[in-house]
Amino acid sequence: MKNWNSYISANAISIDDAIVLRNEPCLYKRKVSLLAPDKARLESPLTAATKLKSCNMPLCRRALELVELIEGVTELVGVTGGLAYNPTNASDIDIVVYGSRLDEVYRLLVDLRQDGVTTPYRGHGHGWNRADIALHKTIGEQRVLFGYIGGSEYNVKLVPCTRPERCMPVRLLIENLTISGILEHVSPYTIPAVYRLMLREPLRLNGANYSWIYVLSYRLRYTELPSGMKAEVKGVLEESEGIIRIVPDHGGYVKPLY
Image (cartoon, rainbow, N blue to C red; front, side, top):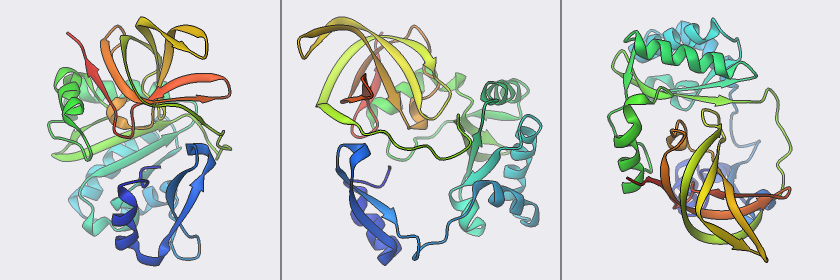
């Protein structure tokens, strides 16, 4: 889902003929870039995690340390990104955890931060805009899903499923909407992250007034937003299975209001 619009050309150049473009009904028929199965090697995150034991690089050892700590809670933990495909050129630690014990994993990450095993993230993430940077300056000290371990950058995605699920079609309602209100937690630590935005002013849509809508994001930078935070949200307003939600992931933002 990250490889559409402006990213298509760059990815098409970097992975050559492994790229396939198609209209994706689950993303209101936007063109997305996918890897052709016969042109790409797919690596299971769980399998990739087991290979860390045979890698002696410092980054691999730090990744293995974090993976083994999480394995004390659940075995459904893996690595993605550079560590999964080419550890010798990897620059950070991308971890994914699946299943129903994500609350326990999150509490573990909180404990590791309190014990000084990990430290807060101080950088600017890939693709962050000014609002994202301002957001992180406001709440970054409390975030534990990404940071540093042993001086290496890490991030952990908590995914509440154990097998692929059918994507439900999405209907585009408004392509560029900016609204504000107060955030309430629904599922703030998972991917996707979900919040309820209690609107400052009702949103009128198709003859109905909405006093709140969902905020949904697949971006790690929009996880761990505090409940009760006043925020301005810019994004795409969409509907899926009768649920109205705003998605800031592509050209949008979540901006704290003071």
